[in-house]
Amino acid sequence: MIGILVVGHKKIPEAFVDLVKSLFDTNEKIDYISTYGHRSAIDFEEALARKIKDLDKDRQGVLVFVDLKGGSGHSVASAVRERLADENYRIVLVSGLNVAMLVQAVIMRTQVEDVEALADMVVETGIKGIKKE
Image (cartoon, rainbow, N blue to C red; front, side):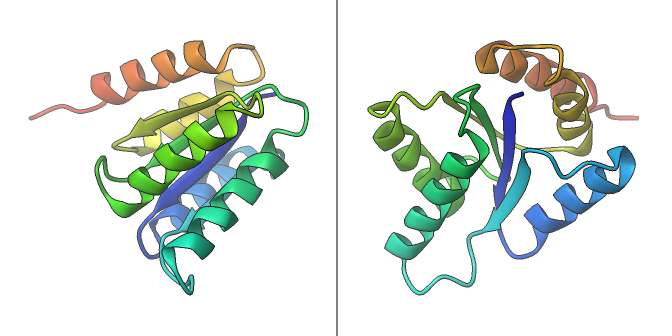
């Protein structure tokens, strides 16, 4: 099963993960990390890398959601993705997280084996879920 990691500012990642855990009663291969509370950028990068490795022990891939493209979480996650690619980790970043995207990821990750395909699905779901009324 593909792992899911939510990265973001303050308590945003925790709130998103708590929501889907309560909706689906699951703790399996889903986690979060905040950009806050680390002694340094290096500490944050190392903590993020550990979380990804923990979520991807079976090398099925990890879908990393970040709250803001270009933000500190996105920048560090991009660097970690590049570094871990050398160790054959399959990591896809998706920025601009919304609830519909995360729900879709949790539902479909048991049915889709390719992390890139799952990322494409959740991005489409996220876009379709944004409407002006």
